[in-house]
Length: 436
Image (cartoon, rainbow, N blue to C red; front, top):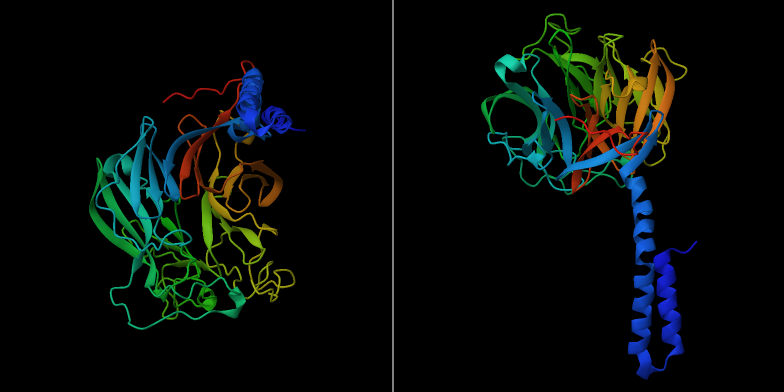
């Protein structure tokens, strides 16, 4: 059905055709009059068309989607005391959001390698120390260049990626995690506590979600750097989930600590690229969401010393359509709780425990990039009993629970957004206003 604006344009067009060239001014005045006559209805129609962008439907009812700030490729959120937030931007900026305003970039952040839109590197995750109230310490994951850069090198394509490898990327780089003390708008006493080893030429799959366990140990997801084989090699920490103490030292109870043929920081292995991880309080285990290749995104419950199969098995295929043996039919590798094909491209996860949306208590919420959604999962023990897709119409990079139990989320884009989701009141039809 044509919109009112279209109708008005048609009125003007018909009148223009009926006039001689010498009377076009009169026809234009007639068209303008038609537009003015329909203006109130056009405004109402425009409001109706914009509403779906502001409100999305979910099992808890309609959710208001409020835009709070604009950022450049934001990657991660961490809630500070006082309803303030730390937000990372991939180009290397850490900002503080407070009382509706974004700060200037925090000083003292380590230098990062970021090659622009499409690069998976840059400044990535941010997390607060479990004792932040007393030590003001935060942790950052990011991508750094090797100190020595070989000359005249270039990457080679891998047939399994079809045409998706950027062979112009000639920087030898790898992920790192640093900690520092947040002092106003500056980081002080910054020190690197962990690095991906070895650094490799070009490519992505850095992983790098940071998650603290209840015992204060730090989990780091470390991608396979698009190199496949290192994920099964215990002498590297690529394609692994790493567990360290807050100072970077190795916990004595790590599964390979003290072994000569394996790295002590490895907690589990056989991973591709994990961009979403959260502790599940009911299970007291790390729950991760792993990006598959062409299909086969996974949900995995992480066990100490477990091998999760990449690149030997996957429920997806390579980008050139070459097959990969599926998980089914082998007990050599840990089985995923669920896989998705088509993929959701998971990024950022939490377990919701708020009262603002009580129907979602204990649900796992994960952001979706290619799916442009928030995926909600209800767990029944170690089984996923319910899955819900909340259509966001935009790439969701990260999400956290706010102090008022609403949700903050990041939209992944050049002009990305910090947004807030909260229920729409059914009585007045207006969004519930959350206290600052």
